[in-house]
Length: 180
Image (cartoon, rainbow, N blue to C red):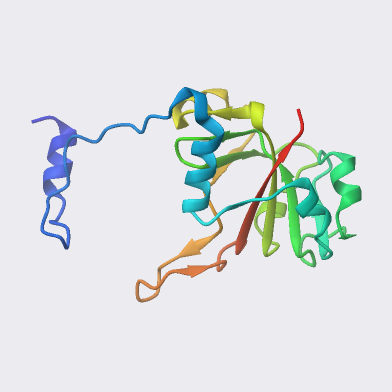
């Protein structure tokens, strides 16, 4: 028995009465449908896909990282200089992982990680060409800067096992595909 089997055999039986399987297979993503797979997994996590037109209809206060394209900044509601008063924080993502529906955001000059954490809505801009199939591929392509994965809106079930959205971060996550 290897270390993995030892750990899995020590896990308690699930409420359904089944022991977890030692055969944990990696998710596979069909090559021709990375975007569809990403959208399916993102929405299962509570994220939403919006268009640039949807974003133009947003009339609240928005904080944008410096590298957000100017055409996006100009289409938003009221621009603000502080993430603490913003209703939306707009960031540019390095890449997205179809397998998990996750986004990889990196810290760089002109980027405030708080833009993806403090406002109630995180607007993540994504070029579809930066979509990768697996988490392994995403980590291999991650830049040297500090990076983090965003997998849906903030959620916790710390108290009484009741799921609550938006306690430790944004209550909503909007992913907006950018033109190539």
